[in-house]
Image (cartoon, rainbow, N blue to C red; front, side):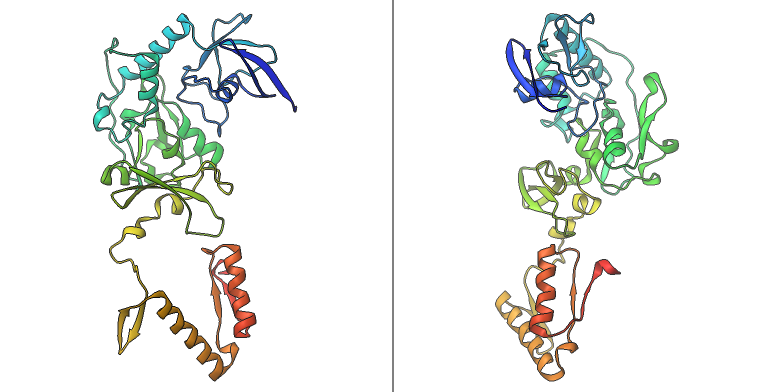
Length: 352
């Protein structure tokens, strides 16, 4: 149903698209409501219960804003003594079973649990007791899974199911023993995980970390670019530190991928800093490969093409275009072959 609705949030008149949840309406109005499990790309889940709000006239004292539809004329309060007390209790319970090593955690200063704990005002640990302890799963070649840091928000499970469609991980066991596991509680390397990294991006804490973060440190700079692996044109955010690529994320505003990446785009950038990578053209002189400028290299290639065509005709040449190029670049390649070389010998690696 189209149209908008009007409601009141913390005394402010707010309009939102019809069909919005209270959380979506609050975010649109710039009202911060803490949450650890909500994601605009995923279906409402209501696992963490931190987004509780009070709705005037409702018989229930508090409702999860992430899964409660906003209605026209609704009056919502996001902060009351009961809500604040409940949120603090939830965060304190989460922290009671969480490692106390924020300063050495790769997610430090980027951790949503850290942010929420500061917002709700947790200043001390009131609850002490048994902590879960798991062996770190480092079987995946691209990221490490540390379940000691997991808060069971379920975002990794849901993104794997709802977006990637792999269902490689699920909730396993019950009660205090509940954890996120692959089939038969085996390492990720033995599952049907595609290493797409969607779960790593979705994790709000330090339970899933790229190996590059652990090896090189967290990023100091972010640059938007286009993925070099195919012609789809996925927009990536390259994370660098000291001239090294330490991470890659999908750009949420990317029209082609909307923040998603494949395993190549997410983890296949190690070649950029590889010591054997060529950074300047090489041409052969007197039997040896020597460095040259781009103008020298391109002039040499053009002259060789022209010589072959002159000696043997255009059909002695062939153009092999690539899926790594854009559609426009492939079009220009075949146009060069047909109109300049005079040949229809054009092929593409995607056909093989």
